Image 1 (cartoon, rainbow, N blue to C red):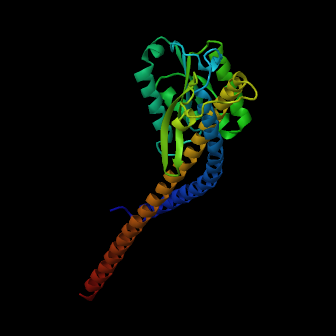
Image 2 (cartoon, rainbow, N blue to C red; image 1 turned 135 degrees about the vertical axis):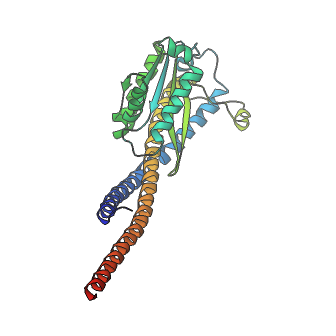
Amino acid sequence: MASLKEIRQRISSVKSTRQITNAMKMVSAAKLKKAQNAIVQIRPYANKLNDILARLSGVVESNIENPYAEQREPGKVLLVLVSANRGLCGGFNANVVRAAQELIDDRYPAQWSAKKLDLLLIGRKGGEILKGKGYGTWERFDHLLEDSSYEQTRTLADTLMNQFRNGRYDRVDLVYNQFKNAATQAVIHEQFLPVELPLAEESHREIPFYLFEPTLEYLITTLVPEALRVKLHKTILDSVAAEHGARMTAMYQATDNATKMLHDLNIEYNKARQAAITSEIIEIISGAEVLRT
């Protein structure tokens, strides 16, 4: 059995750890509220934009050029990986990195072996994990997680669209954690470029005629880039909200485990203290008996 001093030191250490994890849990809960509001607000806009594109997809004329929908053989691929800048959020970072590795191994092994696959990293932890696995380093945009404004992500989205149009990349994919609720995040892989117009529902297809103002070509060339910008922005907001939810859940579990450990340590301490008191009493009684004789 450990000595009373050792047990007291362990109790003090666990109490300090519990204070830290509890504080981090409350901070993450406050940040989650803000991030959750942001992603909840943008989802209706993104869904409505996709709905408009779905209505247009059934009447798009073949002679209308859409440079962002050009289907090419995936000779050069860019994989955009969104992780977190900090840890202590459970398997948040490890899960998204694992999904990226599986995607490389299953879908793009030829591009990877031919060095025709690049990674764009948003989040420091994902880059650190990949570097530790021998994947090297790539272009990074860690600041987007700290300042996840639309202006910042719009600039990156425009850069990706220009690189696709110029032929630098034939395909751009996104891998990130999608926010479900505070305790649940889903790893998502989505094709960013070339864009695929969503299919119209049957109710939309029944409408026989549209009158476009301005022209259909103008709407397509305007709405598609805007939809791509919103999609990238929503991806980052999803990941930020999922990160805070994962960290809050992890810190809640850590605080709960620390509380249980303190309970067990207090029982162990009381048992050791009682054993020490009993031993001292026995020694006193034994000494008194010796003096009597």
